[in-house]
Length: 141
Image (cartoon, rainbow, N blue to C red; front, side, top):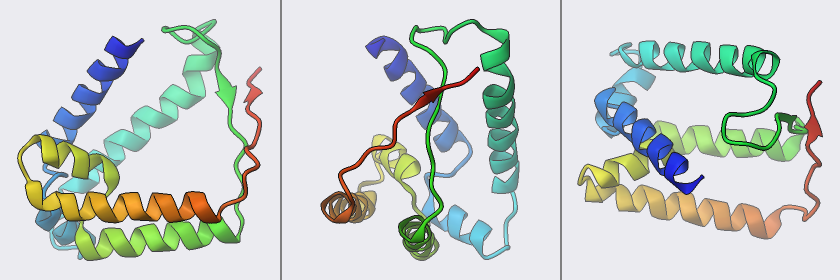
């Protein structure tokens, strides 16, 4: 299982680097509407994710690496909206989100350590201020 997670992470990081999403100036030009090249990356990710979530549970009796398919409870509440807003503001100011920041470190962009520090601080604050109740996952039919 760990080997497959490592492989998936490496593939994901390579895709982020190849698509230039690890370069904050490219992301910021996309967010300003000056360079829409990342729209292809975003669109491709949405299409693949849609089909994977929609059809894989119907085509496969169980996930390839074991376990079972499940639906995760989600809630659109005040905390979700505030968290999304904070994430969006940070992304818009820095041009960095967690996945590309980590992949950027792997590519030698050490200035991204500031972004990772902010992401870690935000995660810590969220963990300290959130309720301890965890939603229960329900298996999908």
